[in-house]
Image (cartoon, rainbow, N blue to C red; front, side):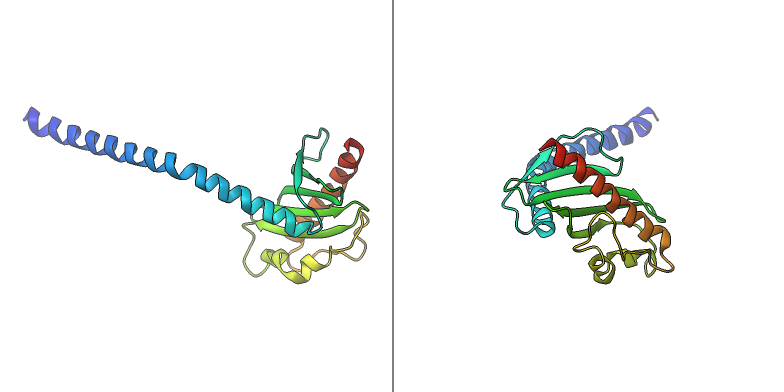
Length: 173
């Protein structure tokens, strides 16, 4: 009776240990590859936002708005790229925004979101994205999307925070 009770526990424990070891080994082998892929994707996204840049240096700045998670300076002085996170209707929206040395948006883009498909997800469209290109901190002519005002408002506010970060980055340079 004791054997019938203990043996399945021993077998399941052994299976768990073997599977855990296999997962740890797989993670050990793939983590550097995944990290390098993510690094290259992030660099490509920064270049997409500020195509004239040759490379970027991450800036350690204090006093940034809460939505600005990272700030990068183009090494050749053509501008800055900001990583942003804001709260939309459906959850966190992650954005990237490039601002040139003259204070105009070169591009902005949603990297990830969980907004409502067909409504809030309109913030990912080229029509909305295109409204920001060339705008200065006044964002004149940029307005929320009808039916997606929370999502688009969050996007707009995040871009405003990018301009606040731009001012801080300019002073730090």
